[in-house]
Image (cartoon, rainbow, N blue to C red):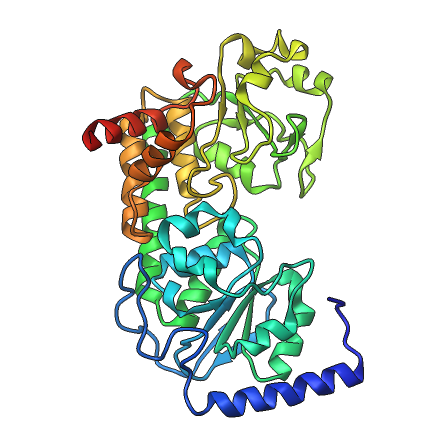
Length: 388
């Protein structure tokens, strides 16, 4: 869909909206949750914390007023959708972003979301489709500022979010928690992250900091510099980003010569990389790289979601990596328990059991037996033994 609307098209849209809003005044019973539905399958969010109307400032600096507790939510961004599940609001969602089927966290925690209408993506947002869902609140990425303005002209409050690093993610959680009346649960989510950060800070105080190279999903030679979320992830896990000298705000492309010059002690592949640990270990260009010669090449798990991105469970990527870099200080068993606790608390499913189920149905990838995928396989085996 084009970003700009002609006068005739916009007038038609306004007339349709007027009819929809008129019908909606008689009761919202079709296409989404009714007003008495408040808890998601991941757990009860509890009583609404807010007294409405509520005014919040979103991450585009816009003041947004929500007149009443929102019962019909639309999320056009996978990070906000995942957050709404964690806040116990899955059943209030009536529309979500495109390609939801590619997000395992949805099928594991709230599979009904996969049946909802999609409102497109930041590249091609479905404005008419979103408005037709009669949302009480729409949450969109900051890139869709123009669409947000049009929706607000039609009477739909919109929050723009930009959770591109840990600080902004924290702010996003606070804003959405306040807007949806789930401040107690959003604070519990933040407290979980804070507690793990404090725990790791204490455990890793004074520890050596190995040199870590984090490779992107498209190529081994794509990496994250110091301005990116992934660099902060490495440092919080007790490492040093090999690519820290790069100041790009997006994935940077390098060459083998640069990678060998950095000579990282560890190479970590993005959770959704389209190449494998075995590809890296067998790459003749890297035969003298320290990480390869020592076998310290790993891929971050992506069984539930990409922990190497600023998602609500992003702290788990730090927890996981700390066990890779410092197994003596951060045992795998401790990290596994923390990951299990997080998903059971905020998403209502067992991470270990879900991975064991997928392991029953799929053959193990080469390298799993060699210890390059720590504690995930141990989890799977333990669950399989219990099952049989």
